Length: 69
Image (tube, rainbow, N blue to C red; front, side, top):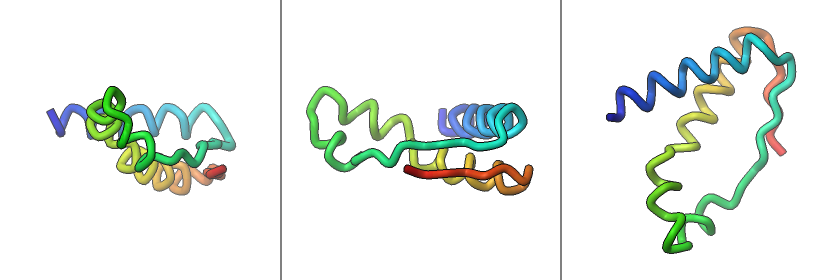
């Protein structure tokens, strides 16, 4: 399952980096969201921080400007 998730992250990041010149990502309070009982499992399962790292690296390789709010 983790390989599938990682593959999805790379494919999605590449698609965004090729399509958009500036990519804005909201800085969310993930720790606070993970404390909420009904959201916790989905938050941890999504591995958002790993996706943001992949997205940032992919955007920089393609000379795009990643922006975090």
